[in-house]
Image (cartoon, rainbow, N blue to C red; front, side, top):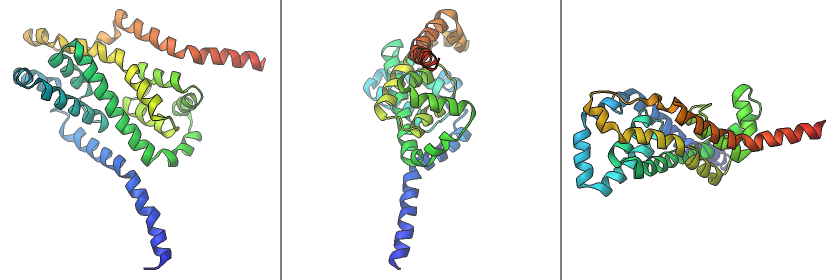
Length: 248
C-alpha cells in the first residue's frame, strides 16, 4: 500500500473513531426506545416497590451505586424513563439525600452526552450552527454571547428538550466546567420537586393512585422557578438595555 493510500485512509478512520461515542449513544437510544418504554415506567415501579425497598434496606450502599449508575445510563443514552427514575430516587432514598443522588446522576449523564457531542460533532457542526435559523439560531447566539445566563435558562425553562440542551452547548464551544456547573445547579430545583413527589409515593401506592406530576405547574412551585429564571435572565436584560443606549 502506498504512502498516499495510508494517508488517505488514516483521517477517515480517526473520523469514525471520533464519531463512535455518538453512534453508540444513538443506537442504544433507538433500541431503548423500542424495548424499554414499557419496562421503565411507573407501573414497573409500583409492581416492584416491595422488592426494591427490601433490597435497599439490605444493601443500601450498593442500592445507591446501582441506582445512580442506572440513572446516568438513562440520561446519557436518552432512554425513556428519566421522570420515573427521579421518582424512584425519592421513593427509595427520600427527598434528601434522594435529590442529591438524582441531580448528580442526571448531571453526570448530561456531561457524557456533552463530551461525546463535542468530540464527535462539535468542530464540524459549529459552522453549521452559525448559518441555522429560527429558535436554534437564537439560542446558540445567546449561548455564545451570554454563556452562563443562557445555560442556566436552558435548564430552568424547558424551551428545548433535555437532550438538545446537552448538545447545543457542545456545538457552540462551551467549556465543560460552565456546562457542568450550570447543569448541576439548573436542574436542582426541578429535581427537588419531583424527588419530593417520589418520596410520597408510599401513600400514593397505598391509595391505588398515580402521582400528580402536574405539581410543577402549581403556583407555589412554578413561581419560584420563574423567579430563578428571571434572575438568570437579568444579565441579558441589562446587556440589552446598555446596548440600546449605546446604539442611540
